[in-house]
Picture 1 (spheres, rainbow, N blue to C red):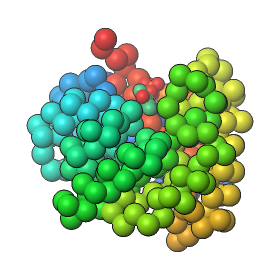
Picture 2 (cartoon, rainbow, N blue to C red):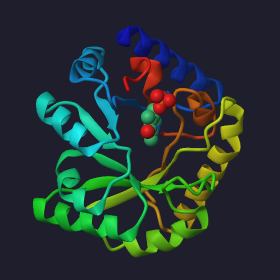
Picture 3 (cartoon, protein in one colour):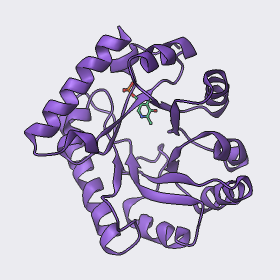
Picture 4 (cartoon, rainbow, N blue to C red):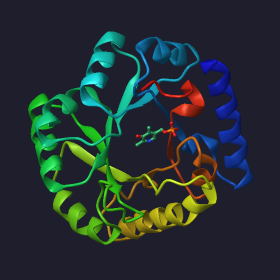
Length: 229
Ligand SMILES: *Cc1c(COP(=O)(O)O)cnc(C)c1O
């Protein structure tokens, strides 16, 4: 099932990218494996999926040590600063940086590990009080404070738009994300050498996200099925 789902999703990514004039190779699929056991991850790896997303640190830590070298993991959940030491050692990217303290703590641990890591700023694009992330207008201030970090490299933005059953309702949020990322890049607050990373789009709205410029899409349910409680 996982293999067939991946094949289907890859086809859809490619077709959607081509239909809006984008190069499908610019779009990376993050298979969100939270709450699924490692054998599901292995099955996806057998179908050439090597990039995964996890939300819970302990769970991720156990899976990553069970799987060994090979797969890459992005952290996509809420990260407490007192867990930054572990996180600095095991992920390729942390997509949910939303405050200075978390970033500087990660930087310190990365420096002592002699390791660099990519990061994204999580934007609370729908201004939902219960959600983490910085408000769009607060992002440039945070990025200014992070310019001097040498080990944590901020590559772009991530968002989780308000939940809805209609993917079209995500579109204006994704458009706002793209405009914000390019605005920040023009102001030299994101890397100049390539397009900013935009992590947006999940099982229900990833097609719209690709049309609006996503470079990372995070898909769980459509690959692995309904998540166990
Ligand atoms: C769970 C989760 C996903 C995947 O959601 P699906 O609807 O299962 O595709 C993506 N991003 C984040 C941040 C998540 O927590």
